[in-house]
Image (cartoon, rainbow, N blue to C red; front, top):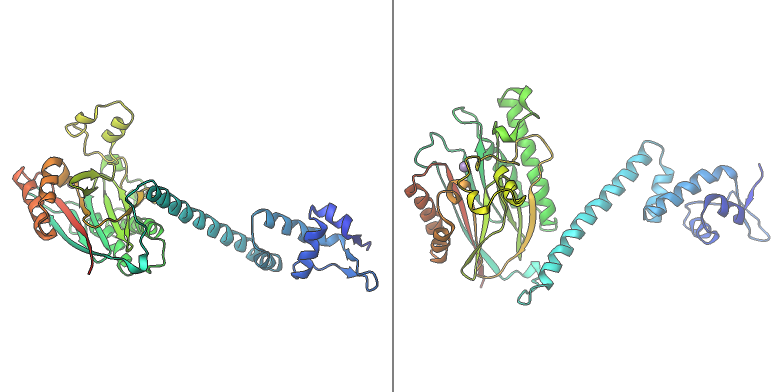
Length: 371
Ligand code: MN
């Protein structure tokens, strides 16, 4: 077999002689022969395949040590190695993108202070309240307030049956976040947990419902599923995920801001400019959801990161509250700054005073300076 000089082999493999020397030193691509007198490296033509693979993997940005693992493995293990690597790159890009978004937001606000997660000066106080309302037979809303995780969910489709509503299934699936590692990127962790909640809803449908419906749950037809609005505390702020028409509000400097947007057919009309915003709440199709957790896979929650400030008061609630009680009254109750238990109970009471036409769930979370 005719051996190739390093120059000829470099041209054929599209690697530079310098790169070839490096790969030799790294044990990644040893020449077939090294002349003992001149020290010239000589390569065999059947080494071209490996050289081309190395070149392609370098194009992907793969580190040399990892390229060696791929090159030394046989298919399909080598293919799995490349797939693993690329998944890690994508995960890294996603969390990097979120961190960048967070920092851009942080740096655009003059009054914002970057706080070290390990020495958080904040403490949370919270309360959840959930009530069937005055007219519905069953309560398919759920509210959860833990140490780090806070959530509301509005289930639909299980009324009258003795199975857990999808809201309960989804909230239960999120609860492991309470003990999740602080090293986890909070938004990734929450995003994953929402996907798991969707899978749990699917499981519940398979074990409790007619199987042929799974995967064909038409959200627009409100067959079975749940909304979900959840926040996860990470020491200096919250990761927020929302799907459906449950909402998250923030009371800051006495102003109430709605942080989430409704995934409803009517809201989509408003955003398209086809319906005036002030007509949305009274529209006959207002409750029809455009997105929800319905066990179909590919749940698409809206995700965001919020930096905390002392004095922030978060409200999570289902439509049983935000459709029954005007935002100005909600703001007034929250602005009284009574303890979260008192505020949450008062909001449920107000919804019932308005007739309580729907189930009501709410969670109030206060961010306070710790001692
Ligand atoms: Mn509702």
